[in-house]
Image (cartoon, rainbow, N blue to C red; front, side, top):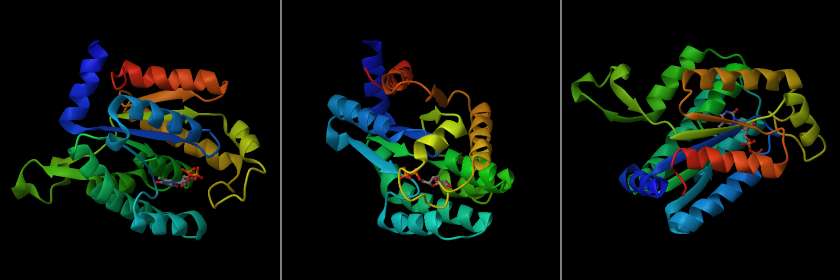
Length: 235
Ligand code: TYD
């Protein structure tokens, strides 16, 4: 099958990087698990990395505890999520992609634009600069080392966005567990987060698959699988 060939080519050359996004309570976890199982079956478990942000390395997991629990201003929060991301890229994501592995990551930089940018209202231009510093992968011209415009920036090959009305997400979260700093935010915060995701998708429409998460679990899973298959990433 063509999609078979495409998916083999894709992973053999440079690996495959898929991120998962959505507001708290959108229900991405079970679908990420299912997708990990599907990729394991096709590529072998030793070729599939399931990871998360903030986190994914010992240092980044320590930063996660601070980010999720300690009060701080939005710039400090942004520095910490990008610091965690830098370590995660260096230690886990870039080596895995260089080996040709599949990386399935629960949240990546779109979450920063959505939560710190949309939710907290932090300056998007500053986030873009931090993004370029953090996710640079190769300089096109070594002599232009300080020209950020000449850097290649690591981004996921596909971002699956679980879109759910914030009111529904709040109902699903209520009483589920002790909320962290973000989960304790009011519905209006998550409206802004969702707007942040939408803005990000509008800027990168080809990278995003927006999934309606306000459906039965089976229907959401069918949409997730269809999004991945339509890119030729699973047979
Ligand atoms: P989440 O991914 O929802 O994990 P869990 O399902 O275990 O609660 O939690 C991560 C939280 O961190 C989430 O509320 C979003 C937030 N976050 C940011 O604010 N900025 C970021 O850049 C990232 C990656 C996450």
